[in-house]
Picture 1 (cartoon, rainbow, N blue to C red):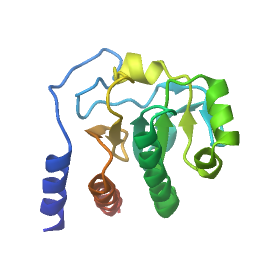
Picture 2 (picture 1 turned 120 degrees about the vertical axis):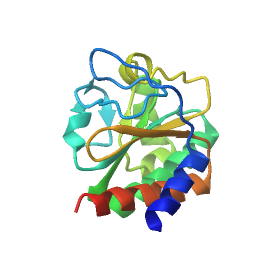
Picture 3 (picture 1 turned 45 degrees about the vertical axis):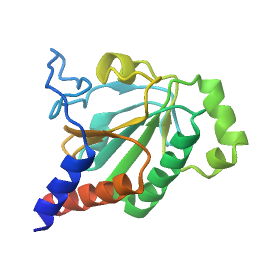
Length: 180
């Protein structure tokens, strides 16, 4: 029953597009179940390493939140994700992926009240993930890509909603129960 409820929640909130394929196993906006594990990601803040690969997070649910430092709704959304990161610690990893230059992110983290409290990693000056991989346009609504513990892009969602947070919690619980 829990699995059916979870699936219904996901279909209500998430939008799916047609599958697309690349020769490098990278995910493209709208594709589901494409691996993105070997991408070298630079300019990571609020994390122990300045560069990472998504494969470093195998075994965890990973959420890539594409938005902008200057978006007020995005800040509200990121603080909710930050709370989930603290709550689920080793089971999940959220990333805030922004196009803003490294200097802007450094200033945000040291000056902004939200930035000073934020725990989730920020990927600054992003071009690789947004343009080459997920082909996300930062001028549209923020979007969240959901990767399962195997690194597979399962869903994409957008919007600023408490309902999305509840569904994310169900997603995390489902995949952590599944991997046991």
